[in-house]
Amino acid sequence: MTNENDILRNEDQDQNRLPSMLNVLSILTISGSAFAAISSMYSYFTVCKSAEAMETQEMPEVGGMLGDMLDSAVKLLNKQCENRLVILVATLASSLLCLFGALMMRKLKKQGFMVYIIGELVGPAAMSAILGSLAFDGIMSILGMVVPILMIILYATQRKYLVA
Figure (cartoon, rainbow, N blue to C red):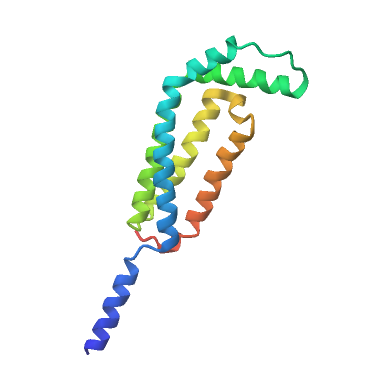
């Protein structure tokens, strides 16, 4: 009889244990959310100075693709400066939703996955609404889409461990 009770107790403990992949993903999300929140607050205070410095700096006459990239960078910085409060709020909301979703998934709750997905989608949606086509210029915007998609896919592979 005691042997059966021990087996049942071990199964219950295994069901409540956080899988290692979900643990790693949630730690990455927690650190990424903290970094995003801190960098958005930093950017709120510095983006206008960066835009001003970029405009006043003498640039050599560059034509072609490089000139277009420099013009696009100046326009992006100016647009970010104009909308810095909205960008800060959107970024903090996105970071907090991702953080809250990851913490829920650490408790093995299925709702955490949906909260996380919403958090990952709020950021790019808000940036495209605020910055328009400038939001998708450059390599950083591409990375800004690849990482969230990859994280969503990786979390989706762990949904089998989440319960109601």
